[in-house]
Image 1: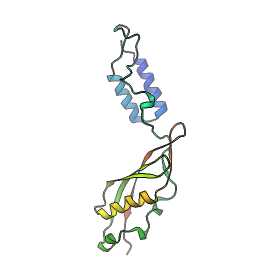
Image 2 (image 1 turned 90 degrees about the vertical axis):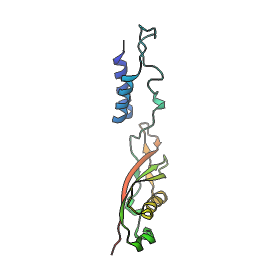
Image 3 (image 1 turned 180 degrees about the horizontal axis):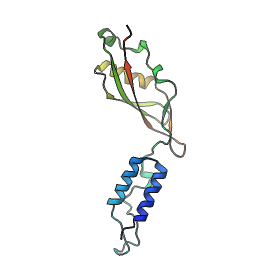
Amino acid sequence: MVDILSCFCLVLQKMMTLRKNSMVLGLVLLCMTAPVHSQESGGGGASLPEAGVPEEQDLPEFPVKRAAPREMPSLWITDSSYPPESRSAGHQGMVGFELSISPKGRVTDCQIVKSSGHKALDEATCYLMRKRGRFIPARDASGNAVADKWRSRFNWMLSF
């Protein structure tokens, strides 16, 4: 017989420690599909199989406190940052980007999630974010600094 209570308790425990709705859904689905050893099958009591549910140390660390910029991100890109070829061509546009933030608060990667339509503006955005972006690191439930992601956008506009 399936020990639903054990499964439910595991889900609640993970919910409380991770505080992530998507993880809770994943754990519920995992509990529903994982085979369970029962006393009738000679499994030595109802328990979740070792391979069916990941151990807590196997789960990725999710920040309880997210990474935050140390200063206003608008200071990271100035008028003098405008790529000269884009300025002379009159290129403008909004760039959506996602930064990977290290546990030390440094930008380790930048991905364009929405292009401005101009390669030079997209590349300049990531270059400047990597060079100038500084963050207060994200923290896990134990207060340890952990890696995080941060999304934003920047609107390159020419002033006439």
